[in-house]
Length: 99
Image (tube, rainbow, N blue to C red):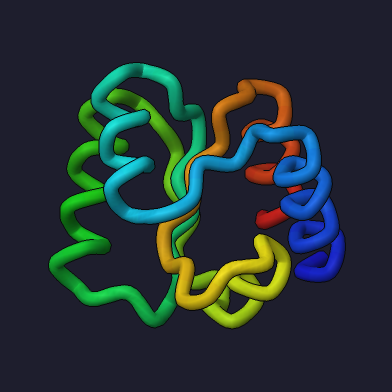
């Protein structure tokens, strides 16, 4: 299941539907352009809580516990700990694959 999730996250990246990084995800959430937040297991408790509050107040699902190493590898960047998805159907599929 994890492999399918990571694979589909890569597809989302190639489709240009990934929002990468803390600031960009925060901006996208505030602008209503983010439909799923993925927070790595390595992120600080303050960051996790901040994104949980922001996501829950906007009824946006949040996935917590994905490996930061996996996120960084699939997105081709170093130390990515917060990722947003800007497409509703891709967000729904990623959420389904995570469960």
